[in-house]
Each structure stands twice: as structure tokens, then as C-alpha cells.
Image (cartoon, rainbow, N blue to C red; front, top):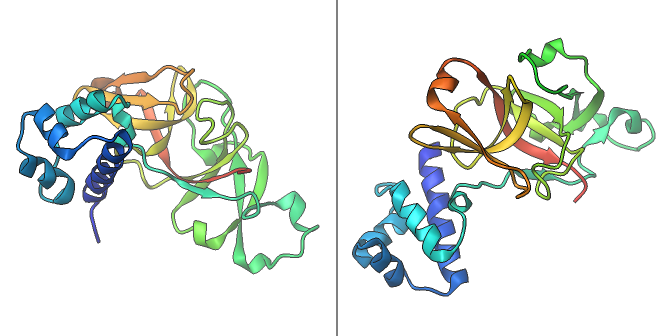
Length: 231
């Protein structure tokens, strides 16, 4: 089984290739811009398991191609169609095999404040989720707000893996800030901290210093592993 790190660099390599093709430039042009040989550049994108491309190279490539650096880190989540999950209030009106579903409570976070466990919050609804989407220790949270639109719409439901608290660049997490409340954001890791990014460009990035995370002021609730919404 490949490590998360290898999978991430594989994703980065694939996205570099895609961006080069889309922008109609050559690998030789990119290598020249980075002041490295074409062979070294090819090693970064074809032998990524042994040759990890440096972050400063990614930034230079992004600038050269006129794209945002986080493009290389963004990883698509599983999007579940509106027909896949069923609100328990609708289940009795539908002819479905309930043995294929698992009943799970839906939570909603109420603004800023000290983080509490989901079990201490009163559920707002109950959802029937296909069992194949219940392999992790999951919680389902209703998204309030348009910060991740159009990728994750206001009012969508997200499945959060509560056991997955290790932050990896390019994934979407549910993070609780004491002054902001629970947020669904892309995470980009840096040397001095992490940046929380929205899909909606109207929302500013949030930078969190490494020492603030270490002090426990920010809480990683878990990683978003699927989204349920009308598509």
C-alpha cells in the first residue's frame, strides 16, 4: 500500500503534467525556468516516489504557468449524488433496502466557542448513509455558509473521518478555531504553520502559526472524506 506522502507526490506530478499540457508549454521550458536539467525535471514528475519536488520549485512553476500553487495540492473528495443518502424523515416514503444503509446522526456547529465533542451536541437530523461510505469512524456535519462553493455547497452534508487528524496539504478538513467556530477548509502546510483556504475566492485565507497549533488553540476535528449534495 502506498503511503499518503507518495500518493500526494503522485498527485502533484499528475497535476504538473496536466497544467503543462493545458498551458501549451514544454517540460524543457519548465526545467529552464527552474535552472535544472530536463532529466532532473522528468525525474520529479515520473519518479516521484524517489524524487520529491521542492516546494520552492512548485511555487516557481505555478508563477510561470499563472496558476495558484495550491492547485497542485488540492485533492478531490468523493462527491455523493443526491440519490445516494436519504434523510430518515424521507426513508419511510421510499421503497429502499434499509439493510444497505447505516443510520447516522447529523450535527451542526453553532459558531465560535470552545470545542466540544460531537457527542455533546444535539443532532439536527438523521441520515441513512450507504454502508460503503461508513468504513471510517465517521461523523456527518451540515455545512453552513458558502466559503467552499461551488465545490461544497451551503447546506451540504460532509462525512468527517474523526480518526484522521494528521494534517496533509491539499486535503479538506473540519477544523475548530476558538474565535471562529468549526470550519471546512483546504489545508496547506508550511514551515511556519498552516494556511486554511476556501474554494470561494471571496473568502480570505486564514494563517495559523505552528506555535498556536502546538498550544492547542486550534482543534482538528477530522478529514472530510465525502460530500452529499445536489450535483
